[in-house]
Each structure stands twice: as structure tokens, then as C-alpha cells.
Length: 118
Image (cartoon, rainbow, N blue to C red):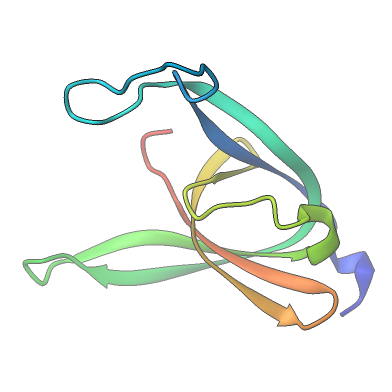
């Protein structure tokens, strides 16, 4: 792949949970920690491509979701990502769905779905 095609800047964000860093923290009554904010784990270059997908809901009605693919350098992430992370691109927020290798040594592809309410 031509490195010049990695021409869009994206941010990888992770939710910050209350109590995780404190030694004697306890979750709430439901076993959950409260989300207190987000932390940017990486700001990297990517090749971005979009495709609309006609995903059907449980009733068989089409639900239009915007799917995006982000091709990034493997070394720029340093395995510092989770599937629960978010991608910020062009003031839009995407949720990571799938991550897989594109080129064994250099690149990975992140597939994500655009979040509507963000």
C-alpha cells in the first residue's frame, strides 16, 4: 500500500471508568463502573472509506447504518486498542466492530459503525 493514502487524521478514544484506578473501588449495585469521560489513546493517520449497509433489524426492516473502514499502520497503535473503543473522524464518532490484519507486517483494518446520537 502507498503510504501517501494514509491522509486522514483519526483519534482513538476509550471510556474512562470511575473507580478502576483506585485500589478499593466498588462497582454499583448492578456490578457496573460509572463512565466518567473519555481518554484519547492515539491520534494517527488512516485511509478512510465508507459504505452504506442495509442491515435488517429483528423485524426484518432495513436499518441504514454507515460503516467505515480505517486502514492504519500497525506500529502506530502498538496493540493499544479494544473493541469497545471509539474512533473520532471529521467530528463524527464511530464504534469499533472488528479489527484484522491487512498486511502481515505493516497495516491493520478497523471496521466501525457510525453512532447516530453523537
